[in-house]
Image 1 (tube, rainbow, N blue to C red):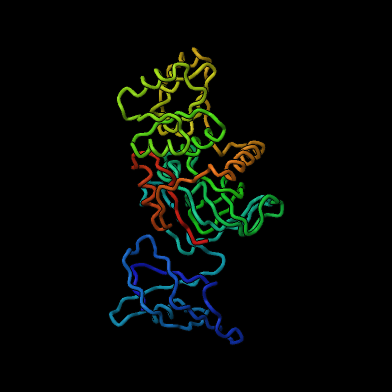
Image 2: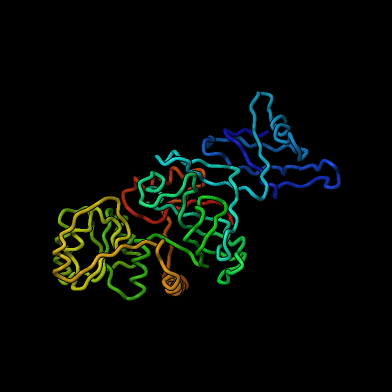
Length: 370
């Protein structure tokens, strides 16, 4: 007998038809039964040797399984039989704190909607600060409720539209430009590539180093400083130290040609003070309004521009894909993963990413085994 604090789900492809020729087909559950706890289930569980139950696949099969699951002590384990049209998925039905994330066990599996889209079986999903802004309802472009979180991830191609030529069924891909979120067993992607993905700050260090650029980075901890050094930074400064900006200006009197800014609400004005002539600031992250002294830009004829993947054109994606393919195939590329979570702990991942002291790599949700 199994005991568990929440429901379990048995996918139909894991269940064996026992007598297909009978008027009432029988399904046998394998032993031991695979299980996925709900978001509210206890982390402690007692799993014993499974008894084999043959249950008619017809009206009332849920009640029959429930009756068979009752233990002498009166505890009960509920089962659902999943068909190929449903999946596990994180669902947000109302914007709010991290605990508004639900884990649905029988969520509708998405279907291809265009000839250019791809159905991906998700292996891992990224968790980014922007995901937490959206979930909290504090983002300019909010999805229609209910929605599944997750704006990037990796997985295996399950089905392709008729016009898709760059990937095929069975390919390992990473995806962006999604019709449905990646915090689910399946998602629909408009853009996917046969390559891995990774975090912005450390990836920028590796990209710049790979291109032979001099990289100066900042971090807030000794561990973070060491990590950026290992990923291509030539010089590293602790942005929590008093006077670090004065040190930067003294050491780099000519200023910087490009600044990649992940916290514009804090640093943007000081960034404008450190630009070289014709220098540029790429704003990748921002959480609030900020003020700048525009004279700093005038003095060096500098500029500020925003970065948003949602507005990348097809020609830009082709260039990006070509450059990243070369990087990912080189021995210098090393993905950095800070922490992994099961899908059921997505809310904890959202909390961790907003309370961490600094970027130490990606937070990743593991959806399924390969």
